[in-house]
Image (cartoon, rainbow, N blue to C red; front, side):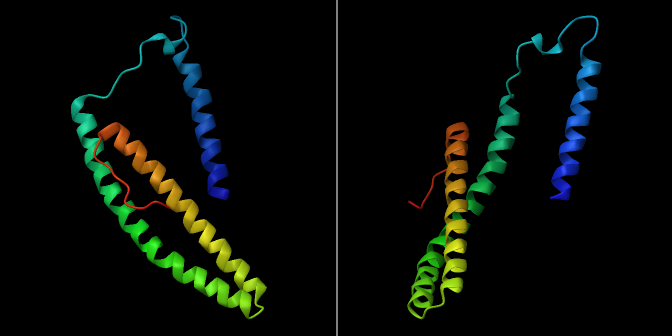
Length: 123
């Protein structure tokens, strides 16, 4: 939490000082057309994205194996009357499913930009 506050302060401070340096006698510096990444940059980013894709798919495979086991533990805890434990297990399952959804979103973005990523899970 403290790191986030420090990071936000640093970014906002640099933006404030940077904006003062950018605006000069010529007006607003953002008037130029945005640059698009070169094909070499895009190839480098896609190569890195391919590594990320492999990692995401491996983690999703682990999650797909873990979720049914966790759901069974949750049902067992609920049946035994351990509601607190069942609630904690349910929270973990929800967290893993949320991360899995984020991974699928990232895979879709990578596929849109690089055209190589694919998701193997259906969530």
